[in-house]
Structure formats: C-alpha cells, structure tokens
Length: 486
Image (cartoon, rainbow, N blue to C red; front, side, top):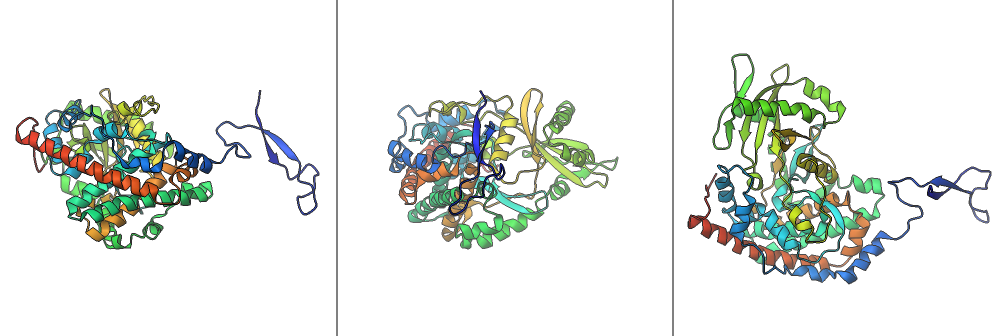
C-alpha cells in the first residue's frame, strides 16, 4: 500500500487561512522514500535529552581500560601487518618520537579502548582519526583556502564520541609537548568539547540547508573566539598558497630529452619504481576516471602522464603503498596526483564490540572518498579511487595548497583557541550525517560533558605517555626496529 503524507493546498477553492477563516484543504501526496515525515513524528532534541538517563554525561570521564587490553608494543607490531616491511622501521621511529606522535599512529589501540566506554549509540560518519594534527588548510576549486578535517583513512559510520574523545586527548598531549602547563592542556580539551557542543546547538537551530553549509572560513575565528590564532593561521595560509603541484614539481623533477619531466630520487622519502610497477599505477588511472564526475574528465584529458614514483607518507600511513603521478599539460605545467593505498579502517574490528553495525565495504578507496565527502563542506574536485594490482587505492591532488598547524608547536595562549576551532569543525563535520538536534539534545546547555571528556582526555593522555614509554623501551632493547629522525 502506498503511504501518503498530508500537505496544505493553496488551491481547491478553499479560503486563505486567517482570523475567523477555515484552513486550506489538505492534499494527500504519496510518501516519498528518503524524505522526512510531515508533521514530524517526534522531537529529535527530546530524544537526545532522553539519552542522558541511559548514558549520563558525567559517565564519559573515565577511560575504564580493559584488563585484556593489548600492550602498546604488541599493538604497534600488529598494526605493521600488511605494510611494506622495509618501511615499518620508519613508522616505529616516528611513533617513538613523542607521546603525541604515538597517539597519531595508534588509532586502532585507542579504538579498542573507546569501544569499552559509554556510548549514546548515535551514529555519525566519523573521521576515525580526529587528532589535533588532522585538521588543516587546502585549496578549493576557485583557489580559495578551506580549513577542515583533512585525513580520512580510518573513516567509518560509528560513535560520534570516539572522534571527540580522540581530539580532546590529542590536545592534552600536544599541549604537553609544547611545554604548556597542565591547566592549559586540560583547558584545551575542555574548550574543544565546549565548542563542539555549542556549535552543534547552533546548527540544530538553523534551517537545514544553512546548517549544511555552516561556518564559513571568514567566520570561524570569530565563532570560536580564537583570535590569538590569527597570526599563526595567516602564516600557515601564506605557506599553503605556495604549496602547489608546480612548486613540488620544480623541486622534485628534472627535464627529460623529449621535453617532459621525471621525478628525481630523494631517498628514503621519494624513490623510483620499476617500469612494470609504474605502468600498473598509470594504467589504473583509467578506472579512476570512472569514479569522477563527468565534468572533471575534460580537465584531466588535457594532461599527459609522464612519470610515477613512490613517496613515503605520514606517521599513521607509513608502510602503505603510496605513489605520486606527474601529469603535464600542453604548456608543460604540472599537476601531481597521489595514488595512496587504502587499507581497512583500524576501527572496524572494534565497532561490533561497541554494538555498532560493521559496514560492508566493496572497495576501501571508495570508503575513504565517500566518507571524506560526507564530512567536508568542500572536497578535492579530483578525489576518486582505483585498484592497482588487486589492491584498493584512493586518488587525490597532491600538494593542493595544503597547510597545517602543528598543535605541538603552538604557544600556550593558542592551544585552547586551537581546541575551540577544531571542536567547532568536528561538530560541523558530524552534522552532515547525524541529526545535530539529536546530538545537541544530548550534549545540553551546561558544561557537564565538557568537564567529563576533559577528565577523560587527561587520563588517556597519561595512558598514552605510558604506552609511548613502553615502545621507546622496546626500541632501545632491539625488540622493535626503528629508524629515528626520518
């Protein structure tokens, strides 16, 4: 049977509604799958408030670490499975550098811990690795700069609390590394949660379309009262504008005899690949084109593929296969694509423990790309995916005016500003997939959640420092091979 929904008709010969007049006639239209009911069946905000009885906000304060928790060294060793063995010492060395760096490389271990903490069961598309260094600047299609989450290797539908707690804990660790006192570090976590909560409340009050596109860049600093960050953001922006394919190609390529260019080896970060491997990567771009919107195809059709090289990527992804592909247009101007292996999310083994449905994934690159598009307001126009020799990859522009703030290098009076800014960005990203009224109803007006997650962040930062110390001891004892300073 076809469902119907009532709407007010302005015709049918009925009188216009006014004082002493009868309402217009009601027209019955088919219920359209994928659209909301009208009138709304229930208040999402009230549903969120009701969740406080089942999961009190103060319950989020304790990490409640499981007695069967894997030790940190074993967790690092297990995370190396499936990676290129010659690169795992670089990854271990980077994780051993600082406790904050250890957290950056241990999303799976933290997911194990978070799966055993209180949850509201509200599902959002989550970043899965929303630490403080995974926010940054990048270019939009018109040359402007956008600031947002910018790493989605671990993205899955999951508990919104996991992203918020990971962000808060990372701010404490980054603040400690920067030399800030404990009150300042805790305040950064507290302010991040407060900004998340207030932003979600703001989004819940806006018309849906306005909320969807909310927090324009020029308003972000004012919205989060992050004025002490202005100078830092301006410096990062200036560097980001110059961080382009052209600049990378000028430093990393050389002319060839036919008028083209090729990559210059810079081991261990940038190295050539055998001809067969380069050919497989280049050939995979044909399938990549099929994942793009058709209006992008003429842009790439005006570029020719000139070279492929292997390039080592950041802490969490070290050991995965990652290539840079050099394209040149008719004038010899470069466009560089990154073709990066997409491994299964480190969060997946822990979703079922937390009572969440484990998503079916037909292609890990597709998972990453669609997750990114669900969370960002503006995404790379060349974002897509492909398969190279049976392995899934994501494809994106390389050096697309990217810039980032190093939270561990911020001054003490900036870390809390940075926390507020990233908390607001995280709320906006979650609101694309989870109803902001529902989360706002749970978070509420007071600071109970802010206090609880700030307490969690300090306790989890302490745990991470102990985990990091275990890894450093294992490196010194020769149990874990590590290349330091690479």
